[in-house]
Image (tube, rainbow, N blue to C red):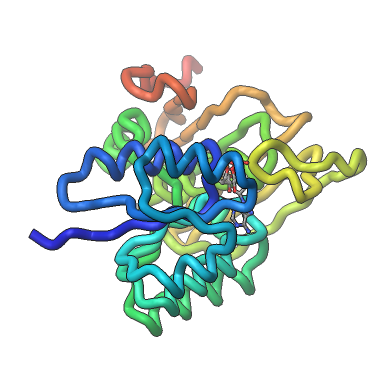
Length: 266
Ligand SMILES: NC(=O)c1ccc[n+]([C@@H]2O[C@H](COP(=O)([O-])OP(=O)(O)OC[C@H]3O[C@@H](n4cnc5c(N)ncnc54)[C@H](O)[C@@H]3O)[C@@H](O)[C@H]2O)c1
């Protein structure tokens, strides 16, 4: 069986989650990592028994002969790290969400990975959560008739759980392409970013509307003034009734949350 050599870029919180999972896969070996902060780099190398660790990820990609790279830095570096990894001869890249900070960067990442025959995955793991898969099965079985509206909301910003909310809505609509989108953000407080994107300002509130090619509509509401629960309301119609699935996501207890189908009492 082939042995895949892994390098991890950025050695913070989520990098540890990646590393623990790689450790569980038989034919995968983490051999190196890159991290700007010296103490964190040293600790990570020690904890995961790495033979080398670098300050500069470009140097790591040039010197090491890697098969897989995890990009676990803050969002502003996702594009550069992914593009450099793709050009260095790796076979696969697991880049953390949000994919990039603008559409131009996202397109560039897709193009470079396609040119180099590299598989690119983004860390939108919530689409595999048990209750999300269950909700999509119910939608596809027409348990709520024809799907009409997907409404997702949560407390944090677009760079944070917001990109999960958008991805999960796409998943619930079977990754149908969007026909049009519109959105608005409010950023009156110019708050500097949170822990996992400290170098960016975030919005106080974001509202978005998606109309998919199959006619389904979606509304995304995020931030301080949005409904604070990380929750989805999935509304369908069977000709007579409107029906709804209400589903909550909690990051640390994802399994066995109920998916309820509610009939309109009128
Ligand atoms: N998929 C998920 O559910 C999930 C959960 C948490 C975080 N994330 C994402 O993971 C990314 C990182 O978040 P985190 O919580 O691990 O942040 P973190 O601050 O704990 O770790 C990021 C690390 O990257 C390092 N870094 C930054 N720029 C670098 C560079 N140029 N070269 C090398 N190292 C660099 C930082 O020093 C830091 O140690 C973010 O994009 C975040 O949105 C995803």
